[in-house]
Image (tube, rainbow, N blue to C red; front, side, top):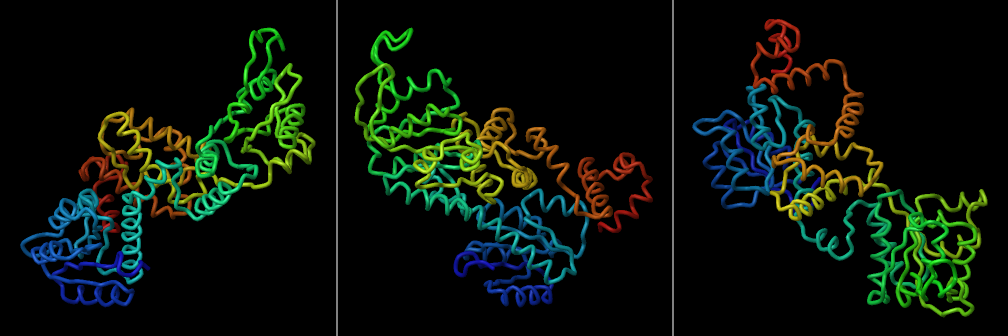
Length: 446
């Protein structure tokens, strides 16, 4: 379940010897090292002397309660997770336990499967939190501006490194906002050309009538307004790399000129009669499938094969799993520092919305969302209501579609109770039922 000798120490705190024995036996069989104690004071001594990853504590115990232990763990053992267990369940205790920092809440008697599921969830969260605290990702971000630990991104970064070790042309595929320019920069700055210029050009942002003169330069008198000789972007990039983003937006005539540069390694300025030899590595990118454009005769086939010597597919954010949380952490630190504000903490529900959201704008959209949240919110705690409306509505549409009506009703009752601080009279009024009916429904909860 968890890598040995890294994240495997559990402390069970319960005044019931049978409960301690059963939990210890079941979790030891799963490969964990399990410590047990019958009271909170002993638990604190263990926590002070041994590095514990997960605390499983009973709620009601003699002298000092499990709630007090959770508070102690949160104040003194920030690198540990907590699961609350109890034979006396209530909405109040569940809300309080989660509010002060319990990862999960189990009601006795619970099954082995429920225990293993809760433990796995706690260790998954712990493993992830330790990962984002690691400086490895931040160092990599500082060097190349790329963050990613998912399998698809690891594959992409491996391809990026291999591409940087050659002088071949590279074609980067990816949706808008996935970070194609960052990959191009990583290729350039990890290559032998790193000390020479890297020149990024968005082909779709320059009018077709100006693109040729901007890329290749012009001589005095070549056209109205050409009052002097001027170098183009290709000449500026001599010895280095030029990045042509949205290459699919170039015209056929421009594609012919680019093909000639690839073949001759020379540039003709607009209005000029003599070529100039250049040494430029060409990296291109597109959010469209160029081969399909070739089939539709909207892109030159010969140019496609010259550009597509090495191709890199950059995955959309929605396919990158926990990278969403890694990026959220990174951008939160970045903009908190930039704006001089205290670093906010996202609730689990908010992070769940982030993970479930489709992110049509990919990493660029995520960065903008984090920037906006930090600008607009003064509260250090960020929850679902603090997210942009579109994300909240998406979460509402996509949640609960695989749940029974009873589960949806139960969750709604819980939320109403929480919203009125467990005032049952107010809750019954909001729900449109009398207190007796509410009590009956609460029996299923309790």
